[in-house]
Image: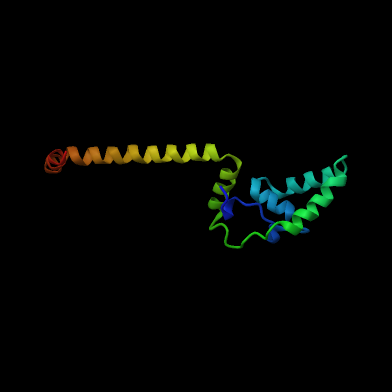
Length: 126
């Protein structure tokens, strides 16, 4: 899971300062306003001595988000789900493929039973 769509980036297009909070929001699928609010609140906690330097370090070392990273909004939401829970996403994809396989089997069964010549040809190949 080390592709360009599963990497944390700075989101300069939606940035307020350096794009770190917007990048975290894009990575996690959480609204950027909530990430920014959490950052501001953390400035008034005992972690404030660590939060601000980490923000600027992340701003310096994270790459900018490529403009062509996602084709559309659906693809962005898909990759956010993958980053949140890869196992759940894999289960969902397997379930979709099983459903497609079942539907194709129903179509095949319908077509074969209504076409005796095709049915005989399939039996001959077995």
